[in-house]
Image 1 (cartoon, one colour):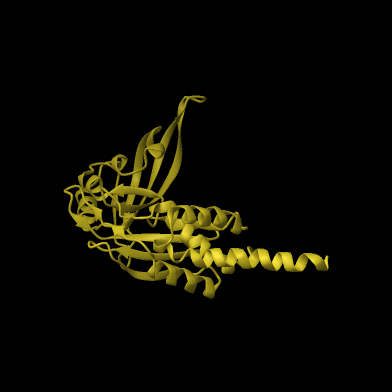
Image 2 (tube, rainbow, N blue to C red):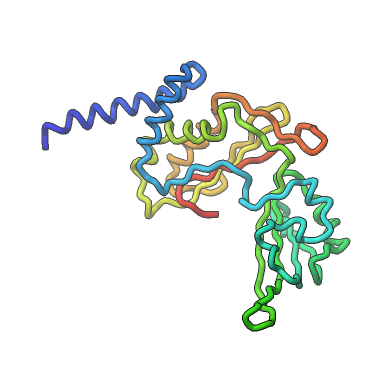
Length: 257
């Protein structure tokens, strides 16, 4: 057993150097970059550790589609409404405003007040839609009633993109946080969230910790890595081709909201 100690130390040291080298991304060749990425996959031992960059919520709607909608069917994800026969007691709320202002309707058709509320939203805002709905039950020849709840992010027509690709960005974060992620207790780990904004000129700003992973050192590491990303961003654009700012969220740690 004692003879294996130097081998383990050498193994960890070599991969530690690889993770450090990955920071100097722009100075590495494509071949060495591919080698580091391949090694990074082996380093991440916690298969359940989440690394994801996206809008705040998985359900999304473009600003153009939202503002032109006349019914909630035009806003909700397709899979949620395919078999819905009718909607009642429809509530729409703005999640980014103080007090979460809301408007109510009796059916799937948006009221003037609901449309007016949605017209105040901006890209990267988030909305809530709740409703009662009915599904046809062919077994009994009647309808069953259910409740629908959706949290939706408003996105631009073309979202901001990273020069080294989404996959490359995730690999960079994995490789340069290995020393911290390899020693966390999965039972203590929480869903972490860091938001940041890609401005119209492609600069990254407003890096904020929205939810801690339960490990302050890990939170600080990811905030630093995101604030100092190598590479460039291409700004998001709207339906008219105009550049717009977009807020993105980095999800890490335990899977959650």
